[in-house]
Length: 149
Image (spheres, rainbow, N blue to C red):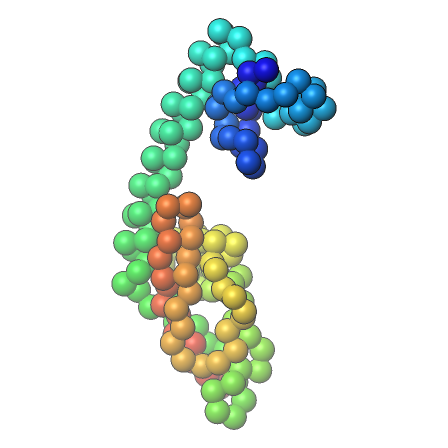
């Protein structure tokens, strides 16, 4: 059975794709979840329109992400945190803290989930944080953590 996907389904396809699935998979999973509908001639034209609109949105968001990357890569985001003896912080600098600092210093809003921080930053000094704001755009952001008095 040919089905047009209403949204992205892992392992099956993207929104607007026409895929061939078994009747049971369509009836028991895709239809109740609202993830797809039967592919008729009129529906296939609608699916083509969905694919074109999705491609246009993707290209626009990619261009926006590239612009943000070119603005953020050369900048160093300065942050301060309370520290003990040496270079160890009392607390830590989290992705949410970094996101707030980026917005305060540059005016660019970056979601904390886009910052790929393995663990919170717990030391004073320079750190590189990879940022992924689009599936095709990934770039480093320089963070300079200083000791607060």
